[in-house]
Image (tube, rainbow, N blue to C red; front, side, top):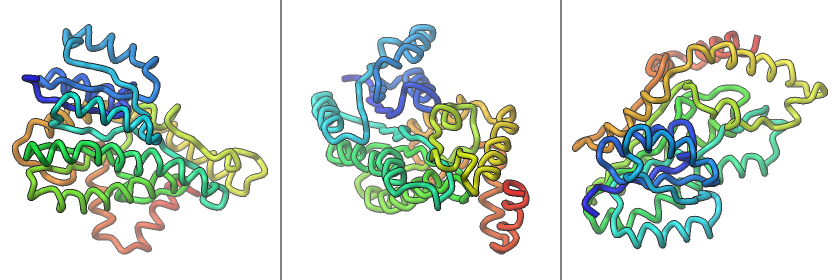
Length: 280
């Protein structure tokens, strides 16, 4: 294969779909993976519109299933190379910790954390043998700043951040870069169909129901100011072709300032600000 090969997980919508298109436009041959390939039509239609259909191949991959990862492993090994992996598949678990079952936490981690590990472990031998490669992990501002009502999502992204930090240090001597993209709020389905709120927090009997409702209203009221997800896709594609990369790339309205404030402010001040804004 003459073209560099990139793999994107969770490519049926949002950042994954747009990143697949951007990478193809940058000259990559893209393996766009998704759990349900019946959802490929939007990606294919957009690829045809941009004249890059021949550079995108769809492959079924459920990052939470070993058999699915094994089938994808055989497929990638047959390709003989992989230059870029974008770990994008994920969803946002929500609710209040008292009411979220341990099983719901496990489901969140199976996709957002263990799924990333499983997919990444497939490509590492190929990248190491090549002496080069890039692994781009789609994190979140929620991997740097905790928010009430989102503990499954927040904790999975914190885990991803710590694992990625270790992984970058392990792989740097082998010519492999590990990068984190940390988006804020963008107009993707992560806050609609990609969000799973524990049922208990939605019932009127829940002691947290009023606060959950307020948090939902806060997210909805701000949705008109959410950023364009194409900006995140363009960032991912630009990282894919960089010779030298940074480790973290925060992006989005208020993201850098939020990270800075958490760094410099006493926790009591930060806590008061978040609680006043979101829970009162």
